[in-house]
Length: 270
Image (tube, rainbow, N blue to C red; front, side):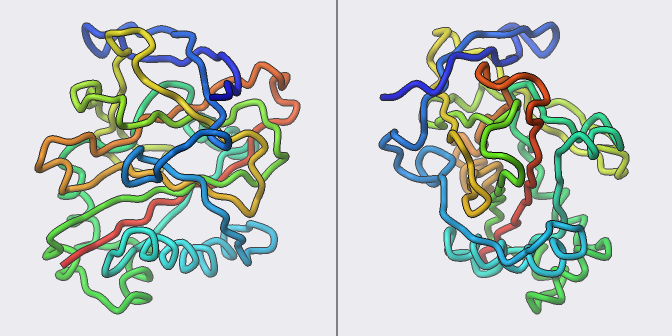
């Protein structure tokens, strides 16, 4: 198996959520690895060319949300997938809010119980959430009644193929559900959004977690990764995919900086 690089990842310590520190890990080249796909290992590299020409906000909301809803349904077999927002990370975004910088600690975005927050958010939807409901021909009541809710996230590089802070994904087959520790996020990036995320504890074996990245990401590629699934929450499975930005030792800081976009598709099943 080819190693992409060795890099420091910032974990929570085993004893609890405070303190933390860097752990040097091997990050494997996902392009050369025999990975089974997002349903088994939590993430998957896909070829997906978008028709968005310049990646301005109006183009993303008007075109890319539909593209990713269609892709999410194709990948998951969901009855409906809703995309109602996105995050871009670049130096310009980071100047607007520090939480829009690449996230350089090992985490996953949502703790157990997040489905209740999503159902609640669609009862009193934002403009983009209301547009997602209308676009897909469903009501907030139908979101509340869904038997299963799965969040599939999509990460795409919009800048140069080599960047200072690429993203690494951890194979969920090497992760125990107890590795995740919930912590509160308030007013994320100034949006007023409060939720519980997960910090990830360092594995007891030191190198038990297996990490992958995809070198030289192109704009017509996207990584899909699971960050929530009510079915796995119910059965005690690892419903989250740990991930983290890391410093590529072959790229000087800011030469070039990362420019990326991420979207979350809420996949519903009745």
